[in-house]
Image 1 (cartoon, rainbow, N blue to C red):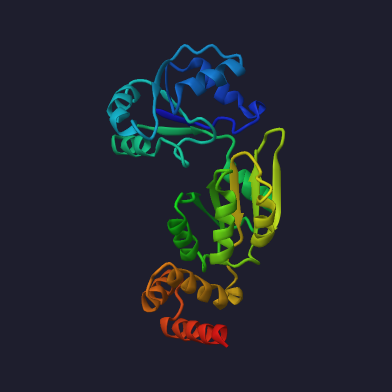
Image 2 (cartoon, rainbow, N blue to C red):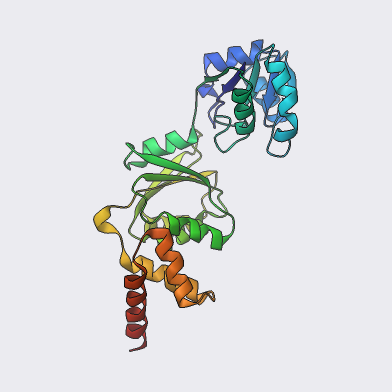
Length: 276
């Protein structure tokens, strides 16, 4: 079988007794980075007796058959550098292939940056969507946020510290500066901190250049709070980048479900007002 095991996302005390036992007893371990695994084992006082395999985004496809062949006869422990394998980490292709091959897949649950950030955000937790890492390029990032303007569920994103300010600025532009959100950094570590407020407030906070891996949590849209002004701003942002007005209106309308005719008229009115 395959055993997916969650590892600490910061505080080593979060390593479960089941994880420690599995690491100590496993004969085969597939790890995102074997060096990180050895460091974790050393920190936990564990002597590994397993044959180690690296399993990362660049070699997962090539390693599948080798690991599956072992998993048909023995248990293979699968770990990522932090958190749960397959969740924005390697392992999905392996699990899918194991399911197809009829190999049992089980889990040793544990720390999760996604659920931890959601829990402390102060935002609705009854329905949420995890969107993974935000795109690196600004244009792609804005399109992603624009496509989520009408998303009613709480949204969770991963982001790096050197792009968090730009991402918050893009989120404020596309989703509205008054949208409630939070940013959690250094979860479970000594300097853990969660900043809460509007996206505009978080933009100002991020100008202080906070460090550490970030989890951005954004409130979903309220039906009565869909901001037509934000849609107009999105169209104008596209036109300022060289997109034709009709194409820009069509793109935003398709992404948000807004009426093309009404949105086009609102943009014309906004342009007319701006020239007065």
